[in-house]
Image (cartoon, rainbow, N blue to C red):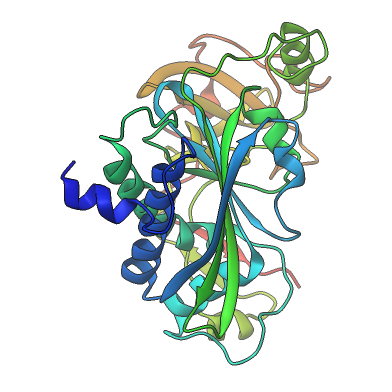
Length: 344
């Protein structure tokens, strides 16, 4: 790193007594540039504070209705960022109508659409931050983090992140020449920080993992999608048909709670039940791997998939292996293209 860049990162009014002062200044510069270039939102950091923080404290810090982003880093490390409702609303407004609204934003919970729109800006800030800190001596903060998914509840932070010390940075921003203010929290693991030894009741322990493995998880089987304008949605009538031109019984995606595709499947039937045959499974850290097992769906719940590890409720038969079944053969009676009927 050039000496000019080092001076830009160094506040002129104080000596660098704090070990993370240059890291904090790098985040200040990266954040302002990402908001300006990524969303066209002029922003100035009025206050930036930082301190060490442990995992138990992190779930209590995000503001109510904050957009909480889980960050994925190298080697399976994870961090978290939380954007205040005002900052979230300002970024959405700049990307949709090109300006910040005159009044304060309405109170609402952030959606996955909000997260999808904000994630490129957040990734841009994190990438710039990586560039600024890459040559800093003894930075003691992990780098290389990017947006992974949105968390619906701050309590999930304590379940997903490792129990270790984190470097917490809180930046208060003046947006659009002071017309609005917002705050963003960023917590990144400290390098070389030892992971706390887990007891039988703490996240990361074998007992906790066993209990978590029995928790129910919802999957969504997506046959196809169709985008509609607001006017088209408002004009829907009972009995109207919406055609899914690209839908195919051989191309069904299973989505997890974070919206990611976890498996690919094809539609058929098994022993009188509507069923999905899993054709490929997304494994962590690798590409889709081929597999084969059936997930049967009850007769009285044709749109829901029975989920679990390998323990299915009574009445939900499952066969492992490539056992042939007429319902998964080429003559299923279901062709390319499907219609959705709007119920009366």
